[in-house]
Amino acid sequence: MSKIADYDTLDYNYKTYWANREYENMAEHTVLKKIFKKKSGNWFLDIGGSYGRLTDTYYDKYKKSVIVDYSLKTLQKNFNYLKNKHQYIQLIAANAYNLPFKESSFDGALMVRVLHHIEDPNTYFKEVHRILKSNSSYIQEFANKLHLKAFIKALLTLNFSIFNKEPYQQPTQENFEGARKGVSVPFFNYHYSWIKEALIRQGFKIEGKYGCSFFRVNFLKKIFGSSFLLIFERLFQTLFSWSNISPSIFVDSTVLKEQAENSKDFDSIQEILVCPECKSSLIFTKEKAVCDKCKKEYFKKENIWDFRV
Ligand SMILES: C[S@@+](CC[C@H](N)C(=O)[O-])C[C@H]1O[C@@H](n2cnc3c(N)ncnc32)[C@H](O)[C@@H]1O
Ligand SMILES: [Zn+2]
Image 1 (cartoon, rainbow, N blue to C red):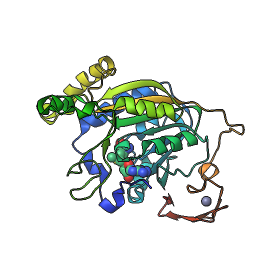
Image 2 (cartoon, rainbow, N blue to C red):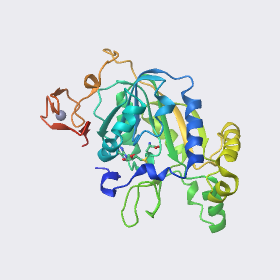
Image 3 (cartoon, helix red, strand yellow):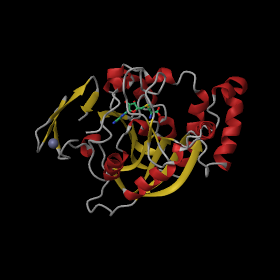
Image 4 (spheres, rainbow, N blue to C red):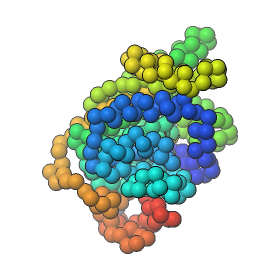
């Protein structure tokens, strides 16, 4: 079984990570607004969505949005904040490798700043492909192994392993997103070709590639400030997205699969929820859901259904 970055055991408050990162936050919003411009649908899923930093990029595009995250504490802590911001958003605690949703139930999904914690992307891509409808959209962001700073470092140290397509596991240090000194958490950087091939293998068609956070360099941020850098960021996103120099890359893709015979639009979250373990139907009471087949029980804990397995 793949190792999971469990933010609850790290007692990590992810909101604080963004306190001084206005430039990166705005750069990511800029890319996503561009990607979502022509998208719409019924159900949308933000995988590893945490406290909902990116909800404003998709909430008005889809009729029903769901955030899943492995951190139950984060979802519980931010339940009121998110419900005040977006009345109809749904929050579910679940593992990206074992999503508690019916096959072909979502019209779109996104994963941002989470893939570095996913040590088995092939299994994960297969799972997200399962819950997405034929022709739906999937947006995958990843930390780029080949970015400009890594390239310069490779030249200076004459270590050219960054050109190897295989995922690179970063040593855990302080200040990595979701990691702590002395605590080992999966943290991978990926090569675009590797991600592209893995997505295609699992049945996704690549529609576009977008570079992001081209100027993620502390001294540039200090000297120029985020508003000024964002002018150049927009320009670089337009001119240099074909390259692999940015530290973060977004891939826009479409799901290729046979249209499900009984494909329909579901109205309520209970209609699309299934047992994450065996994918069978659930029988719901107010605070409990029991799997029809394996009889496993899942509970609602302070407003949040806990489907983590
Ligand atoms: C660095 S945060 C990114 C949050 C959000 N996507 C954003 O960009 O603001 C990573 C999130 O992924 C979640 N996560 C890590 N592994 C996961 C898994 N296997 N399944 C679901 N969520 C996971 C963590 O709990 C955390 O909230
Ligand atoms: Zn079951």
